[in-house]
Length: 499
Image 1 (cartoon, rainbow, N blue to C red):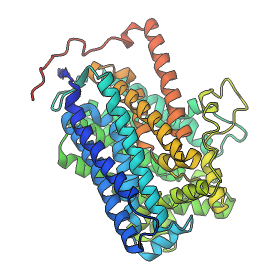
Image 2: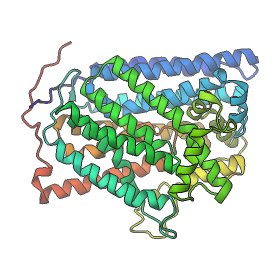
Image 3: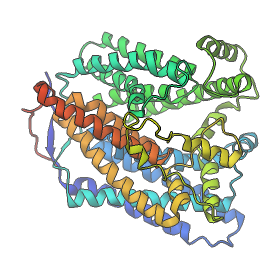
Image 4: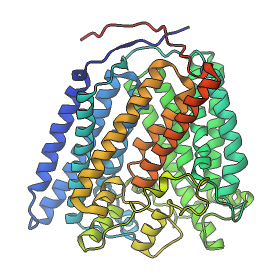
């Protein structure tokens, strides 16, 4: 039986790394602001290239320093905010310099972003990240987190098995028995509440918990989460969406990383996620195109039809659907979508993606005619391309500018920083206290940090409302079932902080 080792957390321990991030981001933002509108094309391109590379380095370094200092930070929203921001808006903004001409033509079909527009987007990205991280750092100084899980501490996995199997039973049964058929059109006329659709997020969480359980038991037990991982990847291809497969692989890798955090493990997990993303992306695009050609929509077609499409693809991949690995990497770039959103605001056509934020807080169970908030991505795609059969997003940073300009960037990013800090505290509380029944909720909060490529209403406000509801249910349920609030780590060992 192992115990969780925690230590008193002094604000300066994390703040010194965050301060370096803040200074670096401030210097980067200042550099962007000093480039004149009359700058030459070569200068603009050089600033865009090296600036995006610098942003990637800053965000990844911040995440790495956090992981090396505090082990449990890898399951917090603030950690994944840094990772996703670096990937989507650091590496993603480098793709226009690294991809071949054919790939660039494909990307510019959405919107042909110009070097000056990309420069402004990079400026918005650096300012947004600066505001978010500054907000989180300030909150930690004003109201510091009292305990954190020290690097090298062991997890207390007592009580994790019943949680893991319960989440797996509900998640996989609900997902494959209800959610997947519903999304494939098996229940026409039915509109499931968003609260019910969150069941679809449980399979990756179950894989995470089962992997931790297996790693602290017998290695042979890993066959169970691996088998469920493969099932989730297959389901992802049938659904013609890459997110479930990538999330399942990510959760499996995170469990391994949480068991023992090393650079080599982190690198292998990153490579594995990249490979899965690169393989599933073209297959998903091909399946969607085949469904649209036959039915005019992605959300139709039987399971057998979709399996046949995937089989045909594996036998003879169409060259028109695949542009090598670069075709998959362009899915990490939001420069074209962001460029369109920024241009729309600058031309006097601000976005309206925030208009339904209050609506997203009301459960559909209480409002049967509630507008479908997820349609904002379809409307944005239609606005840019005229195509209403697909969905796209400019990402949280450009969306803030699209809606309200620079004031929106500041106010929305402050709000995001507050949300990420609160969710990070919640995740660390669950992890250090050993309240495994609350851990699926903590992992849902991690997803908020991952979705910097989404919309604020859908991917921040909506999930936060769901997290509050789920935690309230668990909290009040603990009065009926006292064992829910009992922490197996209540008598954990206290280890003094070592400089």
